[in-house]
Image 1 (tube, rainbow, N blue to C red):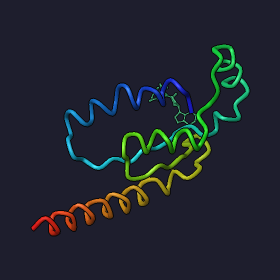
Image 2 (image 1 turned 120 degrees about the vertical axis):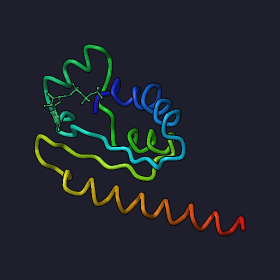
Image 3 (image 1 turned 45 degrees about the vertical axis):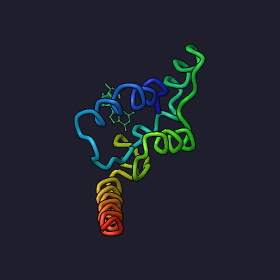
Image 4 (image 1 turned 60 degrees about the vertical axis):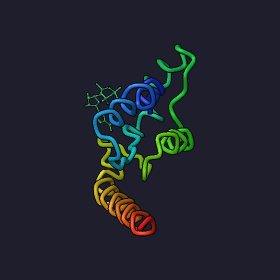
Length: 107
Ligand SMILES: Nc1nc2c(ncn2[C@@H]2O[C@H](COP(=O)(O)OP(=O)(O)OP(=O)(O)O)[C@@H](O)[C@H]2O)c(=O)[nH]1
């Protein structure tokens, strides 16, 4: 939920992943959703004139890197953590099937 961590996905991790793992499908997970309501975190962010990342901002960043899926979770409060892996696996299977279909169309 930290804007700096979110920016790092675009400016740091995405270029690295595309460089070393070209063509690998990606999912984007917004972690630590509990921090959206954490008073200390909010105070620190506001001091730096920042706000926690909203769901829509996370989704938009997901679309920018053309990730197959955007999910949010909080490991601390065990919210949606169990959904992350099956949902990611299912989204990636779908992506792979679509790629195969595109390949067949080219033939
Ligand atoms: N509040 C909260 N803390 C968490 C959660 N999951 C992990 N943490 C804590 O986050 C800390 C690690 O976070 P960071 O060092 O900022 O690393 P990171 O989460 O990879 O952050 P970036 O490097 O900025 O992407 C550890 O102290 C964990 O206990 C969560 O869901 N909620």
